[in-house]
Every structure is written in C-alpha cells, then in structure tokens.
Image (cartoon, rainbow, N blue to C red):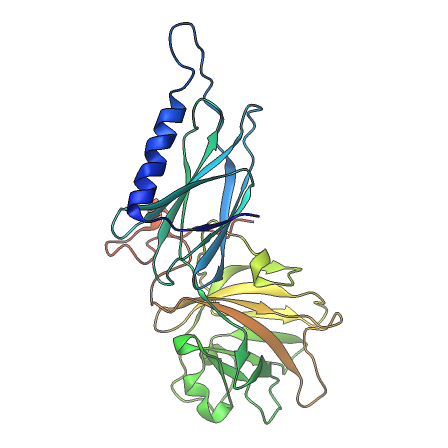
Length: 304
C-alpha cells in the first residue's frame, strides 16, 4: 500500500501540468483514444484524525494502468493534492479532523483518464482508552459506570449519579442488552438526561473500526437499539451527541462474548471514532448539504 502526504500547492500544480501533457499523448489524425470506465463503489473510513482510507472497485477497462487521486478542501474549493496509484485501497494522510475533503478517483490509461467518482469525507479522532485503561461500560447492577461521556474526544466512565452527563449508556436488565440515549434506557435515577441519536443501521461481524467503509452515514429515528445475548461477534454503530458531534462505536467481542466479565460487574468494551467538530459528519453528499454546508437535510442509509 502506498501512502500519500499532501502536496504543496506548487507541487500539485506541477503534477496537474504533467498529467495534462500525458493525457494528450498519442492523439492526432488516425489515432483512437478509448476513455476508460470510471471506478465503482467508492467508499471511505477514518483511520485517525489525520488519515482517511479510500477503497473502490477497479475499472472494467482492460487498458487501465492505474488511478488518479485528487483531494479538494471543500471549504475553500482548493485542490490540495493529486497523485497516482495502482492500488484500489489508498490512504490519504496529513488531513485535519473536522474538515470535509472531496476525494476524486479517476481511472487512467496511457492516453487519458475517466470521469471522476467523488466522496466527501472527514477524518476523525480514534479513542481507544479511558482513565488509563480500556473503554468499558458496565452492566446495570454494577457499582462502576454504566454510561460514557466522550465530549472533547476523551472517554469517561460515569455512574448513574452522573447520568445527566452520559453520551451513551447500556441497560442489561432484560434478555437483551439495550444501548443508546441515556434518556431512553429506563434508569429512574437520571435527571435531565442528554439526548443521543443512533444510526439507522449497524455493521455486524466486525473486529476493527478500520474494517467499516461507508459512502455516507445517516442518523435514524431511533435513539436506542437492543442487542440479543446470542450475538458473538463485534459490531459497529454510529451516533450523534446532543451537541452534534458524530461518532462510530466498535463493541468488541472476546472469545465469542459481547458482555464480558463476571456478574455484577459485566461490561462491554468499546473503541470510538469521534468527530471533534460539531455537525461535521463523516460524509456529505450533494443532496444532503444544508445551507451551512455541515449538517444533514435528508437521509441516506448506510451503504455496505
């Protein structure tokens, strides 16, 4: 896999100049130039606060020699980097969390390039530890915290006494485990609980947040969801905090068990991908850009 450090403006301009010259080579009277088919299924995932990983389905044109990757800052409209790759899995580094970038992929041949496929994405902070250890949310009867506070990109495990600070909690009173908005978990001891929106779908059989690629992320109408105790593999879901910060959560499995440990202190262990800037989703598509260019107008389901 090749890694791409974003080019300075002068370098990007030079690269574009060279590509234009190459695209016109071999043309002239009696020469036929076949424009390659565009790539398909362009998706992205945030590896950390500076890196976005892209993947796409290869062009169906046999003469394709590789792909052109162009990065545009959507706030300024400036092209900040262009490079070539022969892979269909590509990391773009040197980015800034909370900034939405347009990533454009074109198939290349010796003579020309295809039309571009575009995805708009923002890198996100990866949160893997809290208070010196793994991020855990404990079952209902535990003396440890059954909820998480993740504002600012750090995770704090909090008890019901501080339930009004939770961004996410669990309730294990029934045969299913309920995860979601603190105000919808059935805890009677939480006054003025915060409201969390839950994504409209979850990815199952997942072992790492880096496995989950999307085209765009949509918050659903529900604010909690139930997890059957029969689930044995990890899963990922998205949510949005009351302040508007988007996040993805990986609920881990250990030896085929989601709810780990021994009663009354069983727990789930999670990792979080978190957008530190409010109302900047992981992805924006043209039909979903609002007047301020940052939040959703409509809905598009998870794309797998």
